[in-house]
Length: 290
Image 1 (spheres, rainbow, N blue to C red):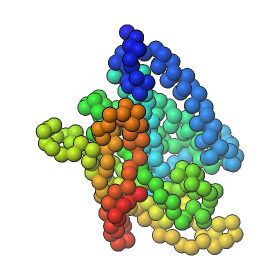
Image 2: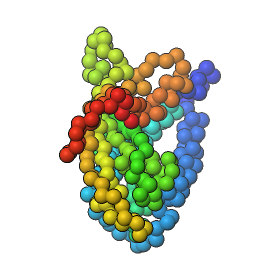
Image 3: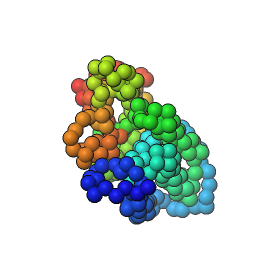
């Protein structure tokens, strides 16, 4: 049944199937997909020679930070796809599976790109990480009809990219994409969603468990010489965090635009106090951890 109400705000999800919105979603996805693929190709692949399709075992690279990225990306794109389809009035279960399918298809395309690049290869462990991310979204939506455990990320620039700008990025946009030293992946739990409504616990407050790594200027190990110049020896180590989280999707607002906007950007973890534990280094306390 198609929604006919003229009073429906653009930012308000349609209660019934809205064919105009469905078409807008389809055509937008059809346009954004090749544009995003082209941009990623220019950032990752165009400077490396192509090869015949091949497989590549990269499970030990970057202290598994790249696997965290695959999990986060497939989860986040699937969640945004679901929310967009619900905005168009698509039935709930269809929106769940189609939305997750969008994220999985996007990630699989990148893996095919890897398979034809001499620098990388099609990675079965990457595909496993993609599956975990999609499953994390689907399982919660089917079980609870909401996301009670969120996957998020945060980023800060590091000193390491200057040693290998081709590998880790030479500017901020490239750093965000390539420098795993500055990335942290977060598993954020919303306690209120597991409590009774009269509990009084803040709806928007959560707990966050983070994973990061530092000291990496190479995938498996750090080179001692880059472009003919000696490079300092950096200690590669993992980082584990305990922190707080703000669930933007549960902040009450009278603006439908802000409510929708908060849901879309809820994959970004806002700075908050945190404790860092790591292997071989001292425990660190942060007033604000990015």
